[in-house]
Length: 497
Image 1: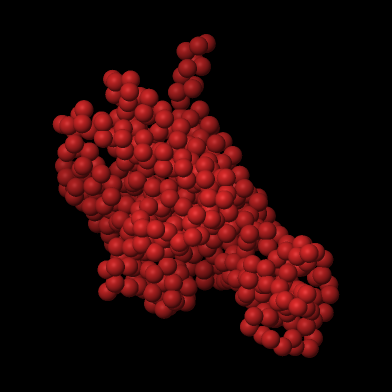
Image 2: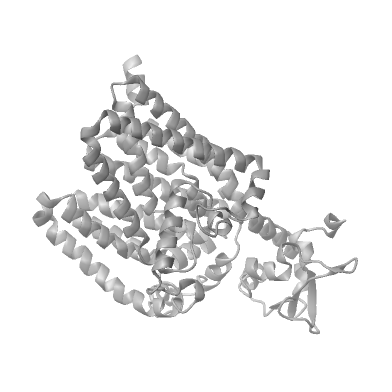
């Protein structure tokens, strides 16, 4: 009986059951996230009325990014289930869990080391960075990218080329950056798998051909997307590339998302807003535990290398592999002036691999000191990520956006019949006690949350209402329903008293 119990505890079923439960607990607030911003755009363009409309999702002729599976098809599914956000979020987490499961299997396949593979998946799964992928429906593309690339790589290693190509195809239909998998795969074969290169060459060529086809498919939409300010490619700005590389690397280490906004030049003196963040007890705990974690981590590594000098070449080589892979999957993102923390989904794997490698070495060491270091590092990692999740639920702006979306849903539900009698829905910034009231930016904030006109088809389907915002339109047209922006942003103007 005891043997069966011990066998169960050591099984993958037990490990993943606990891990998935922990992930659900840590990221539970994702399930309350409503539709806002990009969601309204995708809901509108994904409302297929016929089979031909559905097939048109896969047309490369478009002025926005080509990722039909993770955008149009996904939102079409959400529409089909009555826009049920719980089921939608459950699907997102389910796809994420599949990715975690196959990430463990892939590492196990390559290393034949159960402890190392479990450590890697555990650290990756609970990283607070996943707030930026799991909370929003619009970032489901990142979750699909992660899971499908992991599956494709797993089946590539298993020499199952058809499944490898199938999941690579799904990844390419979910996110353009999936094409970077080819760069990684080629480098992996040349550097890590020289002995099997000839055997894997036909599969590698098949993957390259598929990627080349999609490079042509992406060409049209990217020609439009890269005209937008946030997506302009700056090839001749090495300073920007170095700066972006630094910030993405620091974010992958666990530093806060707003760090790039409060440091003109890291690590020199930050702007005053950085110190204001310490007014939050949660941020203070998160930041100090993060710093403590790295102090312990680097001290323990230094001691380990001193005591095991013969391993320094291997450690340096593994560090180099991880860092190169990290930047391969960032790719063209480094050329954009805008930075997105959600783009770390795949690059993060390689930073976590490196951390897990050292923890594994410490646990495997015969010296008690390193086992103690491993325990402290694991504890601190869990601790600062727990508070990191709480901090970034707020600092990401998602909590505010979600609150506004909930307020809007209530407001529009209460006033729907009256609103539908009018041609215009005017969001007015009121004057209260002689002052213009614009909490959170007033009507300009609402335009951002509602994504301009795109929210109309969600809240008022089949209507011809035009939304107008006070920050753009100073005159209220006739036949307008006037919605006071503060009623939605604060929900009650009495909050100003």
